[in-house]
Image (cartoon, one colour):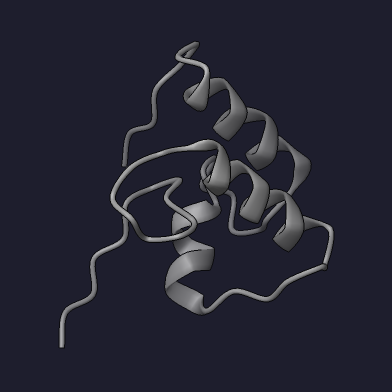
Length: 70
């Protein structure tokens, strides 16, 4: 089995939207849990943890101020 994750795509719909920012924020605040593949996708700065820095960066991506690379 092969699983593919798009960096920043918290709801696995193939695109970065405000819904992804909302889900990432909820995961960061402990209001929801995510599986390991989603956790890998939403760790947008690649430091191995979900933090406010990930939320800030994903918001910037959503607003077109930066981009994400693997």
